[in-house]
Length: 416
Image: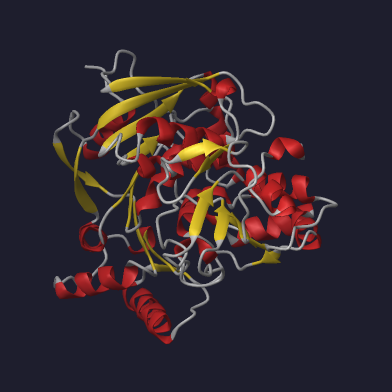
């Protein structure tokens, strides 16, 4: 019987025939935590009586959310992760290496793999054809110890994207539009499977942006079939052996199919305080912002910094704060070599260390009372950036960069 991409990956990895709605125990190819969730996972691992990691080199501890540490309590948590890494042989990604999801994309994600992480945006790796999903710290502790986990096989929503983006419209606008269409709980515990001519033409960077935000409409996973673009990406990473073609079968059964002509999408913004609360950038034009934040696991890749740099070149930010955080050390290096960092600094940007930075509201950009920020991150919940009396708008790097110039939410078409 024909299978969706989620059913196919889990069937192949578990070695049994599985269908949506069924329960499967599957081997895990990578289990990881970050410094917000990792300490609890380590303590659960210890309290569960486990003494060894099933796959030390496929167990990674990322210190990225509060990196460098802004408080002694967080420094102690970091010390716990470092000690656990030394004792158990787990891989440690320390301060400055980058956001876990970008690092996973660079070094681990590949077609047909099962990846679990103690962070909801683990779904990012689905862009490379991996069944990648976030779990609680206790579940990850068990996966670290046993090298396997259990899942309910999700039903699948097929997203067919056709057409071509207009100038000034990007993958971030597409996924914000889709979340607005589906709603914040419109695909709860379902798989989003992306396809169509527009998807066929998307870069890996664009696919990572889209997969990253699948969870914002409740999805368990966001999946892209692997193709020649996936292959070239993995080859560029020195991981050509990780590539294999994988896609859904013809005639696979979907819960529903959503068709979108991306040519009808315009620069889109999520308004406070939910991601599905969308409007166009033009409609929100004139709303003043105090801070612009470009980066995160959603839009901190080299292509994103290039988009921002192209708009900000030979221009200057308004009387606001402009923060830029490359998603990984490699992205930072490459952005320096390409000249993007110099352009951004000349425009008045503050360059932050590779990591999550302002996204989670721990440090490096906490908002003041009644301040507004336009951010390329993936969440704008009340208090997300450290202050419940502030306001977060989500947008593409292009819209964020244009807004930095004017000091208000601005359609990037004005500068492209």
